[in-house]
Amino acid sequence: MNFIGELRRRNVIRMAGLYLVAAWLATQVAGTLLPMFDAPAWIARAVVIALAIGFIPALVFAWVFELTPQGLKRDADVSESQSIAPQTARRMEHAIVALLALALGYFAFDKFALAPHREAALVAQVEQTQTKAAAPAVDSKSIAVLPFVDMSQAQDQGYFSDGLSEELLDKLAKLPQLKVIARTSSFSFKGTNDSIPEIARKLGVTTVLEGSVRKSGNTLRITAQLVRASDSANLWSNTYDRELIDVFKVQDEIAGAVVAALKLKLLSPATEAARQTDNMRAYEHYLLGNELMAVGSIQSYREASEEYRRASDFDPSYVAAVVGRANAHGTIADLTGNAEAADLAMGVADHAIQMAPGDPGALSARAWMRAQFLWDWEGARSDYLAALKADPNAIDAMRRYAWLLATLGQMPEAIALARHARERDPLGTDALWTLGLMLNGAGQPAEAARLMRESGKTKTSEYVGLVLVEGLVLSGSSAEVEAATRGAPKDVRLLGAAFAGYALGDADASRRALEELKAKHAAGMAYQIADVHAFRGEADAAFQWLDTAFAQHDGGLATIMYDPFLKPLRGDPRYAAMLRKLGLPTPTDANAMP
Image (tube, rainbow, N blue to C red; front, side, top):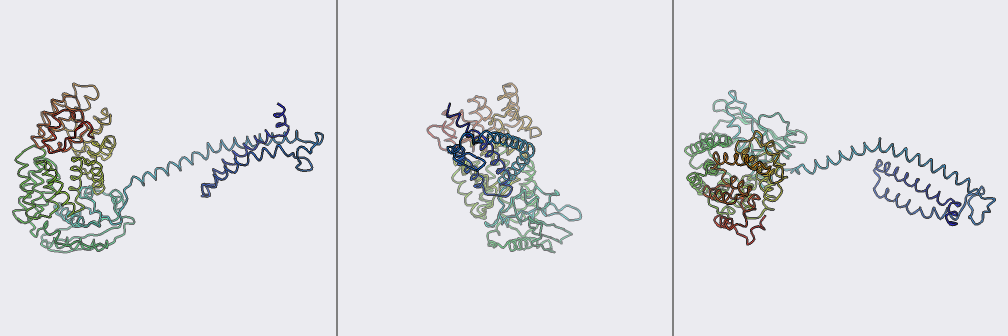
């Protein structure tokens, strides 16, 4: 007690309180003021450390010395009659109260005036950082080719102006030094009023090629300009007046001028010659075939095949037309399970390879069919690698090869390639749902569902809708399926109802949707029907529909190795038997598969 009393008499306790309050106030003020002057962070830390170190010396000083009218003296040298310690104590108490009031005022000012500004600035900084992180890195040598505008008086040459854009895009895509955005993304801006900087931002490019075509009789006037996205500056432009028969020469001239403007070297024309034609009638039928393929129905695919056949009639050496016909029949076979269509597609693809062994389009088409209809995985791999070597920017080959890699168990490589394909085609649907399919298989269904939903393509793309349904169900969000697929194609909504009804405990609703799905889409969705049965715990029915999918050469079977809905079946001997039928590996512990 005597020691405590002596601490009080010497004002050591008051010194401790005064020091702590003053130190707290000093650190708060420093924390506010120093960032305003862009002071290094170490200065604020140094202030705190110095104040902490000075605490003990301050207490020692208060113990040893006393302030007298004659100045500082050692406490031992000051008699009791001469000591003014009581007066000093009162002054220190007043100082403590004043500092506490000042600290309280500063605290209120900081909380209600300064803190909201700091938080707003921090939120803005975080949002800016996230935006920069989310935005794809823009390659300085990148370009998007917009669809050329049809300026003809009758406005009936849209297919021709689109075809010119496609030919230019195809030529530029042959340059490995140049990042070229895929057609599906570039053409999504057709008819819109988006500015060049806005289009470039959405596509992640630094330059945009745009132009127009005016056709009058057999005369063409083609204008083209290369625009820098950052400031809309015109880097290059030209106008070409040509007879219609010279259109292919004009395409070469424009592509060469663009490449020169970008200071790149054009590849040898020999690598492109096989896909061109000098016959305008063949070219027109080829463009019409492309337009019909974009419609996306069984009937339009049949009509597209006929247009490609007519193109070949006018120019039997036109490889692009043969490849188009192979893809049309292959798509019909995939959607209908028609074996004759599959055989025809394979025959046409082989013919395209015979015509031009190194053509990337022909190689990619045959690779897809080898995997789709023959389960020839290694043959497909060989063709895909050859196609990508011939054209590193071939988006279809890129995304389909990602699918093959996933089938063969190389999921990290598959996802990386799918992301790369989407970077080259950021607004297209095929690259989008391919990536979503990979993410579902890799155990990231919430991310897959988010990408599908945010794309806004659920109502226009069946495959995006299918991936969304599966992602929501796998991530435990089955209650959101109905709202998320409202307006989507009927088969997508039926699949969603079959999955979600069972997950939410409404077995009857699930069964009704499943039966309607079987009645209307047994040809083309046999694999998805097997998925629903597996999800419902109905193994026998699931294997029956897997057998049906096998008989139809359903493309969904390519996902069997990593399909999360089939995980309950992996311990069943019938699962390993199906893998053997497909020529896929059968691990000893099937349940250890992803």
